[in-house]
Image 1 (cartoon, rainbow, N blue to C red):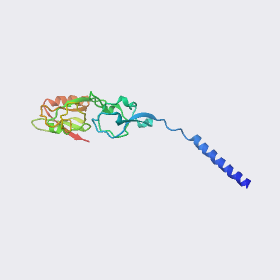
Image 2 (image 1 turned 120 degrees about the vertical axis):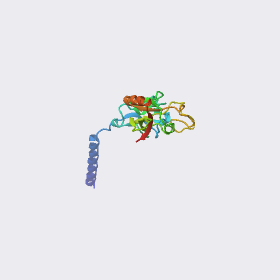
Image 3 (image 1 turned 180 degrees about the vertical axis):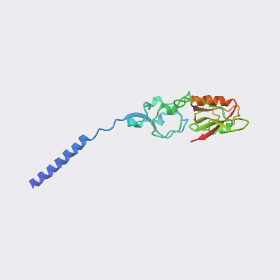
Length: 203
């Protein structure tokens, strides 16, 4: 009986030693970094509140190099596009009171030919801007996939669902704010004097 017990004890010791060896050669856990993520899905034009933000740890490769690490840095900022929950935040996804667009773009105020169409444009949409001559003829695309930005506070009339509110005349309706490349902004400015600007929503 003692001999059999010795065999069992030896087997248990061997198993423990093997488990310890496996644990010793197991690589250490990957390093993680703390970043600010969204607590829920947010549409473009949302002003970030503390309840919209969370701090979580992710693998270094899962977050952009300029990821936000302190919620206080982005409280009060505005989402420039529709953003999903759990997305690490970066400055290029947000705007502020100055209505800055994504990196490499400039913000341009565009008055469209049809204010009713402008009223349907929500922040975060992408549009092509087409310059059409009043006398007719083929239009010319002067900006591609321009990003529609939130309108400044006070420029949206009550009862409106988009950037322009209901009850505004053509002259009173505020322009649509879009983020364009500097070259496109120049083309839009040159075309607005002699052409009608039309917006076409694109993916």
